[in-house]
Image (cartoon, rainbow, N blue to C red):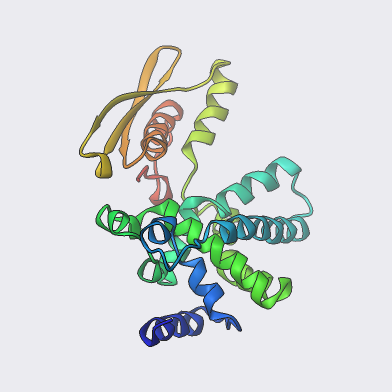
Length: 244
C-alpha cells in the first residue's frame, strides 16, 4: 500500500474513532467491484465485507431497540430499524466520515458520479462495519455502530427523520381506500450513466403525484410524498418535504 493511501486511512481512523490492526482490511472495505474489475493486482472487493457488516449492523440496532423500547411492538421496532439502517441514513453517515473520498472505484464509476451514489456509500459503510467486526471484535464494533447511529435513532423517535413516504402512503391507502398505490414509469431522460426517472403514483386509477430521481426508487419516494401530503391534507414541516 502506498504511503499516501496509508496516511488517508490513518486520518479516517482518527476522525471516526476506530483503530485497525489490519489496515489492509480497512482498505478492502473501500474497494468497489468496479475498481477490482479494472485492476488485476487488486482482485478482491468489499462485497463480502458488506454482507457481513449488514448482519452485524442489523443485530446491533435490533438489540439496542429491543432494550430501550420495552413498550414497542415487533412491528414498531421493525419500522424504526428500517429507517435507521436505510440507504439514506447510511449514505449520509458515510459522507460525514469522508468515505466518499476514500472509495476506490473504477474509471467508469468515477465518471458517472459513483462517489456520490447513495447505494455505493451505504454499501461501503456496511463493509467498514464488517471489517471492524473482524479486526476488533463484536464489542468494539457495537460501540462504533451505536456512536454513529444512536443520534439517528433519536431523530426517528422524536419524529425528526426523513419520512419513508412509500410506507406511509401504502398504510394510509390500505386503511382509507382498501386499495394499494400503483407506481408507473412515465418517462426517463439522459444518457445510460446519468438517467433521470419520472414516476407517478396512482390510487384507484387517479394520479396523485409525480416524482423524479436518479433511480426509480428515488422517483417513487418523491411521488409518494407528494401524494401522501395531498391525500391526507398534511401541512409539510421541515422533515416532510419530499426530496431525492
